[in-house]
Length: 450
Image 1: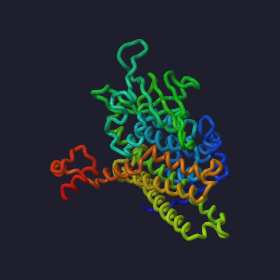
Image 2: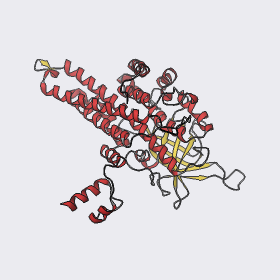
Image 3: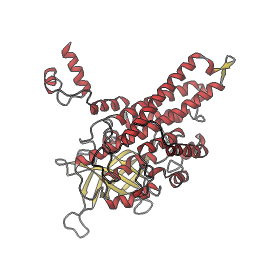
Image 4: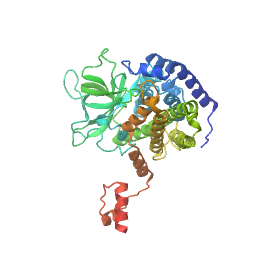
């Protein structure tokens, strides 16, 4: 691994930082989140047209910039520094990679260029608020996380042609999903749904054009923006009542391919979100350091007190460790395939097991610590709406609710890395069943040894 960034990567960082510094201060953020879409649409189109931000990690063959997860992570670090409300994560880190990996050539050539230029925004809709599980970040995604054919999920059935007769390639979706990032404004929805009823149920991904049928969308689709603590990360609840959909892919993909694509997308999304959290934490720490240098107490700057210096120094060390982990996760997610990659733009290398989840856990934990100290060290003003400290604190709390908690991210990473291998004989002796998790099995073995 070469830890040095290229001049092109430095230029992406510098250009984006300068633009956001001019257009996305704390006051502009507070105004943007109160608009119906929840973000500044003019700024988003400028970022897409001038910098190609949503197409950074897409191949040039589909209108993208031709970079990779590292460049996307660097961009997310800068958007995090400004706490930018935008559909970047939903479009570039969740929906676009799935279309690239599983979509047919027609779907790729039609949708990806529009996503890369910002003409379309997209998101991933997972029922039951189980986005982290679907992306294999907090548990295996080979189970019934999308509903399992039961109530509470999203069901898909093939629709018969207009004249009756046998079912065709058209599909209809029925169900609901909550906590969908930018779900109230995305023009393209990638929806995880179950087919085959209860007995032979399995998860597939479907495309829904939410901009079809006029401003209200297609018949049967209801989208409601949800109230969230972090207004800079807008979420929505989707209700689908026989909504027309298209299967993602030219033909039926097996369950293993869908699970693998979701897991690979999860590793890249975790790296992007970790870098974004690092950017938020860096901005919060810089603002806090600047404040304690100027704020005087007992006739001297608050930052001159050794206790304050120690607290800030600890935060700085923690932040640098989280930044290194996020960069490594992005590099791991963008490695070239060891073999068999060929010229297929959808062929990716396999990220190291658990790296993305561990980087995200460390970044979220760091952001939570830095945001809490920022509020405390700013004193009374840190609790006010007029100050930016609450933006950092809310982002820390809501990101962990969306893709955490941290201990589950780490537990899943330990499982993927094989740190707690299951031993059938030992489980039988200690009473830990085959379904017991690694921590339960370890505790059972320790109890038996005692």
